[in-house]
Image 1 (cartoon, rainbow, N blue to C red):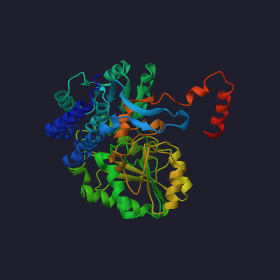
Image 2 (image 1 turned 180 degrees about the vertical axis):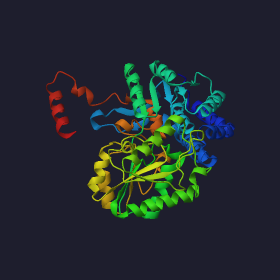
Image 3 (image 1 turned 90 degrees about the vertical axis):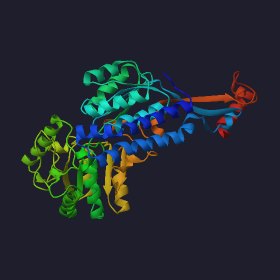
Image 4 (image 1 turned 180 degrees about the horizontal axis):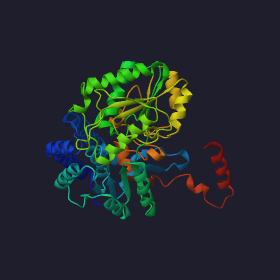
Length: 451
């Protein structure tokens, strides 16, 4: 562990951003090779959030590292109380493939800011991006500060079995369980950013144009491969047809008359996920769902691995697409007549990473919030909650453990050490020492009653 003082930690953060800037074109090329990610999308969703995270850490690092004083109870007069954040030590970061740059380097910002040494294991599913990450991190840091290890599941298993002080994993729930199991063997703390089925609830009071625009954007960025994308839509029955129509129109606005041909539409990460998404769609159609595909062409073959943004109506809970996290550009739709019905559907996949509500009825909105649990919630918005460094990001149980972003990342990678320091030789504490008679007994009764 090389914790470093404030100046050294700031130097490391600046070195990280300098390396990103230096390798920006290589990053963009790699993201296109791995995911056919458009340049504008890569800049906005991979590089810009990282820049803001680093800027925020640099601005606030001094206060984060400083003593955090807390009030001293009257019964402890003569002492001063504060908390000091100390590095945990060795941190392991295992990152995902859907945003391979941002979701690798953003937790690294918190780990470096907190003064830790870090082992980084990028995803093997985006090999070009992982190679660039190794190159840029090797240019910015010595291996005793940041060590990048490439490889597949066997490498990840070996790393989680190695001694460390904190593990940070972003990915699927099943692998998250394995990471947590490995952490328990060495009583190592964890941050798990997982997934789940994030619902979007729309009632009849919603602004239809606003809802359609934002749901379509949030669902289909990165070809739907977003952990907090709206996974399925639960819409009040009286507006279902109109809203579906507007979302389909919005897809055309974003990607043209033939979305499958659009350069603004990325590809599915690999053949396995490509076939899995198509199987979910085909299974739903066989069970009675109706498929809506703007442009009429759903997919273009495994060579290009592109699936058109599409909707499925007449979905039911027994369909696999309503039971599994989709992570692709298809939005299943179910309708409800009573708001209790919507909550029943949400409860079948509890504790989502995100939950979205579109409504102009404040009472109804508050009711939906009170009757659900989620890692984060947005009202008449989608996805953007992750972009605010002041907000903690994370899930609940199957959708995650712990929080990240800004100070929450710094604290997650720190041991918050409590201090009590004597400031005066005179205090009330000696009056509580044995023998418990006379003034000691009188004082204890006074404390119980008045302090």
